[in-house]
Image (cartoon, rainbow over the protein chains, first blue to last red):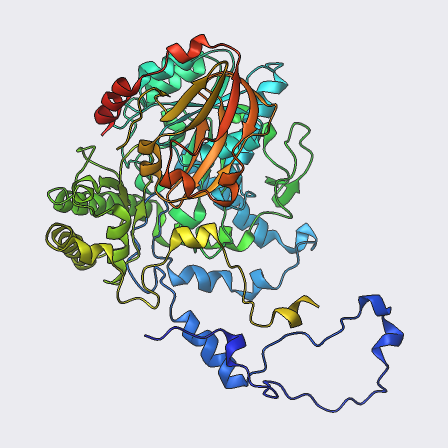
Length: 490
Length: 127
């Protein structure tokens, strides 16, 4: 496959993709309309190309995407499940697309009802008492949840709680969100079973602890079995428990963060609830809280009063707005469609399928790759490329080689506590045939790593561009085309 | 993996080279190898006061961003600005590529660090 030229490289002077009619009003000189210092001195450096050049260029680029609609995408801790197309159909209904955010509440009762009902269903899924649909992503949900925790402690005059504890296996967003919310971050280590080390956690408890952030199942794909003891310990010290919902795809309809003792939860609708993921969003990271934290939720909150839905802004303890208008409405709508389409039973089956698929791949691959925590996993599991590394083949090489077989590689080098980590999450929507195809490929790569390591180290061979110089690109980034430097800079 | 005699080592894989009441701090060969190709280094500001165990610099590789912890307390006298333009120096020669020079406020802290033999043993247990 030949690399696509840039659209600037396709240009030939005089070619164009538009044809405007003659102007039928008097033409004024631009200099009489705009002060000369604001007028550009040269024509904009737009590529001169024909319509068919433009269409072919962008169509060819779009065909080089790899998404969950084009192939298997086993990216651990970032649930890349198939997004049912009915969600898209529903979100395009004109009753939803033709409204304006400033329309009177009485004219958008249907949309408010969707928000209210989705909130209720997410409360039911998580075991929480109140929910805000406003945060636009998971990390935004984390920041919102942590601001709520802070507001709660401060409202009680408990102003010295400035520590948030995170496990050493946590998503990087956890410590980052805690720091952004003004907390100090303290790490707690994992034990030999891949769970939070209870004694290490106990030693960190004090009246300075604002809360503990935990993902359950954690980023190793393992269930925190001692979660009740952990919750008791944190609550006893006066702290709160934050549930990072990135891995909620493993537990829907089976266990609920609210029942485990968590006080605040965020969910990623673009992971667990079948709305599109990646490409910069939009996403949605709703936050659920227990009753005592409800007064601190962002405004507005959708309420149902006297037979009507309304937006409640009168919440004096609220942390305020976290997003313009009412969150990413169409994303929430797609999640609503997803939940309604498959129902409570379907959600539970989705989680069961996700866990079953992950365990199936894990049990087939553990003979060929090192499995640092050899116990039943949840929706994902973490292998180590240590065996292959001994032969000079790194996990990066294995990931690159997968590209040659048409797979999006799994998450690599995360979580940080596993050397040469490969984190695999197949999700529930994949068939046995797809899983078997991936397993076969992984086994073949393990074999190549042993017999012909150079082959794996040189991969990929079949992609548009072959092995990239990632370090070179990061050290000396070239961020834009410089072919027409002089034109562009004027 | 290369370990140099006469340096002191921390459990977070930093090395300390003491000269009088000053100390150079960098990351070890084990650390640079674990991180892979280093593409960016964030240095502390001079005159910053740091306590032992504080994160005082960041090294970023194609794999991960990692905090560098100071094994000792003191004031930052000088930083190695060469690393800003040439972060790969840490990969090429980790023990020459010091990150910061610190004026020690508590020279006894150095005694608690590992020597080369202890550090080599520590690393073999990490693997």
